[in-house]
Length: 119
Image (cartoon, rainbow, N blue to C red; front, side, top):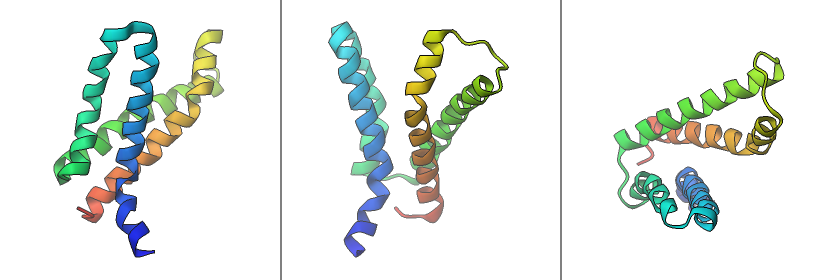
């Protein structure tokens, strides 16, 4: 049990790295060389795994909580029919729902880790 609690602090970073890797492979199939800048988004998360920094940890959490909150607001606007979305936009919102919730939860987890002084 002690081993599991030791490695749970790395789950949010591994989650974001896996999302970035999936995003890279998806874009790389269609666009090729222009997908490589996507890998730059993984540098801060990889850095947190190698050499943790509390300030970077907290700022990563805040940035992704803000981005996820913005997307959650888009979902609420869709549910309340405040904004008219096209069919393709609704399809994107539906498939991205799990990703948005996952991003929000992992971002809160990162903030909790930085407040809790896990590193």
